[in-house]
Length: 195
Image 1 (cartoon, one colour):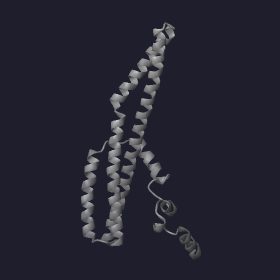
Image 2: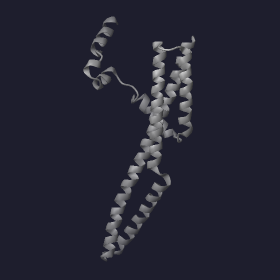
Image 3: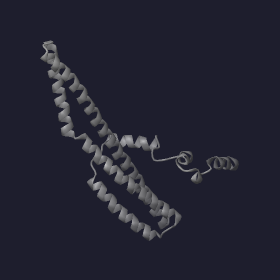
Image 4: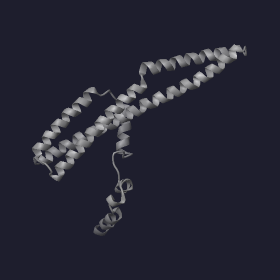
C-alpha cells in the first residue's frame, strides 16, 4: 500500500468518526430542545388550569377546585425546577453549536479526501493539512458536551438507514439549476447497455 492510499484510508476513517460525532450532537440537541418545548407547553397548560381553579376558589365555587389548583401549583413548581435545574434550552444550543463546528470540519475532511484523489497536492502537504485539522478537531472535542447512547443510536439510524448524509444524483439535480444538472437517465441507460 503506497503512502497516498494509507493517507486516504486514515482521512476516510477520521471523516467517518467526525460524521458520527456531528450527527450525535445534532440529535442530542434536538432531543434537549424537544424536552424544553414540551415542558414549556406543560407549564402553560397547567398554569391555565391552576388559574381557573384559583378563580373558582375566589368565587366560592368549591373545595375540590382549591385542591386541584393547589395540586397543579405543585406540578408547575416541579416543572419550573426542572427547567432551571436542567437548563434544556442552553444545553441544546451548546450541542447545536458543537454540531455546526463538527459539520465544518467534516466538510474540510471531505475536501481533503477529494484533493488527495484528484492529486491536486503532494502527500506531504495534505498530511500537513490533516495535522492542522486534527488540532482543530481536538479543540472542538475538548470543549464539547457529553452525549449519550440514545443520541448515538439516533445518529446511527439517521446515517445508516435514513441516509441523512447522502443524496442520489436525482435529489441533487432538483437542488441545482438546470445548467449544472447531470443527465442521470442517460447514465442509467449506458449502465444497462454495458451490463
